[in-house]
Structure formats: C-alpha cells, structure tokens
Length: 376
Image (cartoon, rainbow, N blue to C red; front, side, top):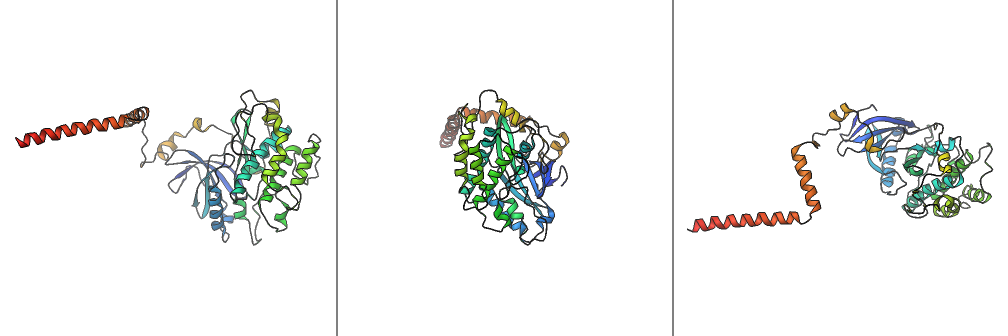
C-alpha cells in the first residue's frame, strides 16, 4: 500500500507505522470526517487461506462491540487488493515491549498498574463473551495523555485467532515468546483463562525482563507475595489457574496502592481498574520506568504526536482530503453566517421559536391586508 492511496473512497493512507506477522499498519485519515485513524492491512498470503476473510469479519464484529477506555476502538472494515483491512482509532505511544526491553527496571507498583489496566479491559471483554487469544507486548500499547500518567490500550482482539492456520500448512501468525497459555500448544479448550495466563506472563516480563520459562536470571526485588500470585496465574492447567481477570486484579491491587494512594482523585472505568490522575509532578519511579528503551522486534509505532498539532502535507490536503461532496471552506461568508446563527441559537434556545412566531405574525398580517383589499 502506497502513501496517498485512497481506500473505498473513504480513507487516505498518510504514512506507514510498522509491520508484523499479520500484515502492515498505516496512519490514515477519514476523507469525510477528517479525523486520523490507524489502518491494519492483513498480509495477502494469510488472507488467501480458505475461510480467513469470513473469520476476520466475524472477529471484527465481536471486537467492534467492545467499548472500553483501555481497548482500541474498531471503526470500520474493508478490503484492499483482496486482503481485509481493519480501521481503528489512532494508535499513539509505544508498545509494552519497550518497557520490557528498557535498561531501567519497571518498579513493582508501576508494572502492576499497567497490568491492572489490561485486566480491566480483559474483564470487560470476557463479560461480553470475547477472548483476545494472543496477548503479546506488541499489541499492548502505552500512551501518555498527561505527563507521568501511562495509559494502556489493547489492540487486535480475536485477530490472531481468525488468522491461525487450522490446517498447519503455513507459518503460524500468532506471536510467540512465552506469552500464550500452554493449552494452545496442546490443542486444549481455549477460554478466558488463556488471557489470564497471558496477562500474568506480561507482568512477569515487566518485572523480570523475560517471559516465564526463560533461563535468564530473574529479579530478586519482586516481593514473595507477588511471586506467589504470579505462580498461581501461570499454572499450566487452566483449571488450577487464577479463575478470572477480576480475581487476578483483586490480588494485584495491593501491590499498586503505593502509586494510587497518592492521588485517588479520579478512577477511570469500572473495577478492577484503579487508574488515577496525579495532579502533582510525576514520581521518580514513574519517570525511571518510562525512560529510554530499545526498539521492539516486531511492530513499533511512530512517536506519539498530539492529533490536533499533527502537521499535514499541504498538497495532500488540497488534492485528496478536500472531498467535493462535503465542502469545508471555513472562510466563506455563508459559512461564517451559519456558524454565527448556530452559536446564537445555542446560546438562546428560545430565539428560534421567537423568530418563527414573528415571521408567522408578519405573514398573517400580510394575508389579512390582502384579504381586506380583495373584499373592497
């Protein structure tokens, strides 16, 4: 897919953001509404497998039904050159892989808070009957709407399940690295407990720098109680594992209280999330945890840029982003009059009724005058 390419007369490709085992990710813009979006194009070799397009459509519909602040919203689905593409809200920030690869160890309470946000998203999705199926550091994104306040967004709900090769005659698109539950390898029953395992594996990687089962040396700074919580959530048998995202969040919450107790002013989303807004300066632990990091091996997003200040290509704006069916000339005198009228009507809700009554009165007076002249 090339830059400035138009998809279905609705989206224009701005620039590539990265690529991974399932295809490529682009920044785009909605031609009609003018808002930025992310466009994930499925790899053509995967898309041509029997039944893949139908499975992608089914999983996309499930993901589109999810409305949660820690889940990337799915906006649209289309097809480009025989391959499906998925349109989501803009994906800013960086992947969780950067936090894992960082030379500065993530503090316990910051790591637990990030995973609590993830568990909040999973708890909501599981209650809606949707399983992610392939949680990995590269589909858990971190942005910073305010300095020192990391915000988690989960992407790709059900996507890898839709693309998995059920016949075993090609590369397996699901990310590996020790983050998938053991029941995937044994063809066992897959349910919400597989996501619980993956969430615990991500927390293990944040705390120790490696996925579970790695021979690398683990960190000794992790409290023994937290180690026991992780061990229970990482049990190979799903029946012996921590039963739900809610249960795991309840056990992790005490380890994040050090951060949340400083400013419990605002709690975003429903339990088990314990998000907060910190009115003061960010703590040293937060700044260290979010300091410079190495590039992730798979998809790595472009640097986060506020949407309102994002520069546009002037030629692109004039040639493609101006849809003739939806003129948007703000300098037009008629546009200024309409904006003024809308502003006045919004400020004075009874003004419209008053004008209507006045016009009706004038019309009635003219009609009466004409009638009287005719009768004479």
